[in-house]
Image (tube, rainbow, N blue to C red; front, top):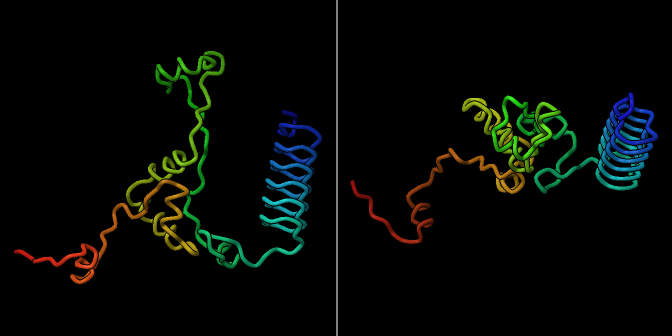
Length: 192
């Protein structure tokens, strides 16, 4: 790592993990903008390649697209840019565990803790996602879940596939008697 926190070579910006970047916090290569994960971009926040605009995921774009996909469906970029994003969606895939917080098994599995004072614990993507959600208080979880449901194109099934989090855990489904009969596929008799 150099004095500008670049982990690779030939960067003029700071905190880059790719090569030949002149911007900041790029993980791709040959970028002149900031926060790019793609390559050869001159704009900011691109995940695609060869873009000369901002916030693009495609290739060879000079004009920022009006629509982006949210929950597998098109959405006006402006709607997403103005949406209230739940804070639990921002989570870490790694966590530093100090020696004093390590279990005996973690010490056996990570012997370098003796010289480093701990170890870097890695989480699988869905586990990290779930950890971020599950650490919320009951009240905060309810608020954050409502924010999630209010996102453009919100889809609980897509969200579950990505995160492993069922946001309907505590919902009670309301239905009429006829809907209940249809759901069961047979007639029922109400007994008091």
